[in-house]
Length: 271
Image (cartoon, rainbow, N blue to C red; front, side, top):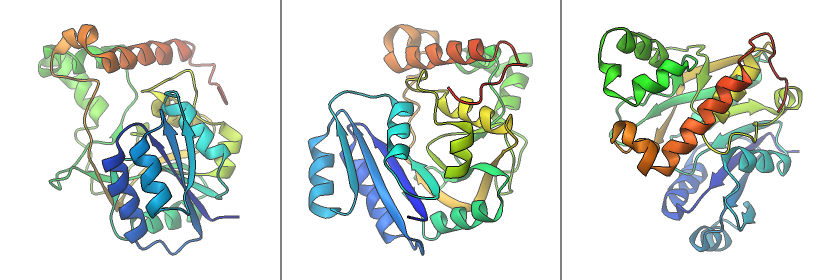
């Protein structure tokens, strides 16, 4: 049995995956760990990289685009670790970050989901912890209205704009690009809800953890870099819904999320 399983769901970004795997290998991880790569829509570059440079990695290739949540669940089912670290392939771990997260979550059994401090490649702060979405949040983020009055206030509350990112926080949810969880908690809560093909699967998962007596914790003592691009936002405002496929995925997932929790008395334990 491994102490930690690092699961990466990859989709056609082999150069970023190469940097991610390199950072894991070069990071001080004093643990018995494994790496599982779920290759959603097989990338020859990723396949060759792992075959030639990382033969110890468990590589799971799929011809079709599985969607993020299904890819994560497949990775979990094919892993052995007592704890699970889910990473996007565009993450670069800094020295000691993974071990710090592992030591923290192992000491705090009430923590179901743990996320590191995330920095942009120029070392500026990246926003990765949030309050729950409201329908108005979508409108504020995707239109000019977010710059004014009540809409701006609602957006700032969603972004937790007044919260110090250098201190431990317990937000409603964490961006799923780098999160650590215990296998025992996942057994109780269930995996990601595969009805969310992409986007909102992390919001939903965090909500289910909170409603089943687990904390969601932002832990800035562990730092990672994230080559993050808001692919669902091309800067076209409301026109993104017409021209950007990932914007449509985002809005579709938002509708599913709000419908799922339309009755707050009913919180699903698992999908």
